Image 1 (cartoon, helix red, strand yellow):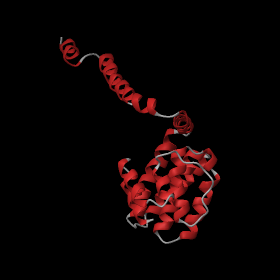
Image 2 (cartoon, rainbow, N blue to C red):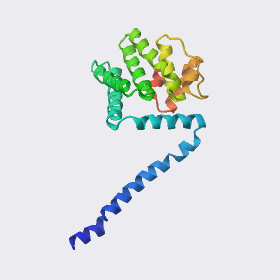
Image 3 (cartoon, rainbow, N blue to C red):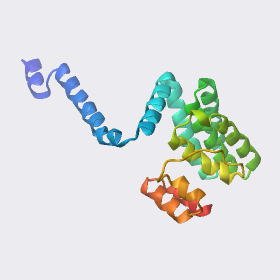
Image 4 (cartoon, rainbow, N blue to C red):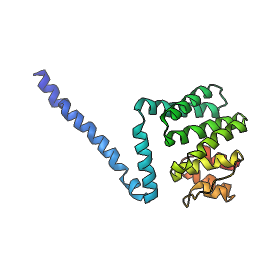
Length: 196
């Protein structure tokens, strides 16, 4: 009797599972307008990144993402503990062999070197990232190129999508680049555009 009452109030385990799936389906469906608005090139980049993301073990993905996030924050605060996280992220990215992860880890490492005043080490990290640039989506390329310029390396010959903040940055319109990055919810990059 109590079990029947509990089932009536809370539903069966199956009912709860289906309800939970409903939320996931709603969340996935919410992305439909964003996906529909992507160009073929942008969608190909998303598919490539998703495929690469799926090839790395979940534990490895989690470690890279966590290490990059914590390492970047600590580096931006000037905390020496950043290297523990950034080195781990880079090590896991190298172990994975996937350009997707290497193109995340090398620029984070380069940024930390730049912030610490070690431009040579930053250049070495960005040079390693540039070797993987042909495998990068346009969005990834646009996030790496400002570091190429900041660290005094020659910009590779690439085409960026119209409207990308990096286009305005390289045209010398730092204010427009900053506004564009702000509009994308990227205030740190906007601040760097003012710095550049």
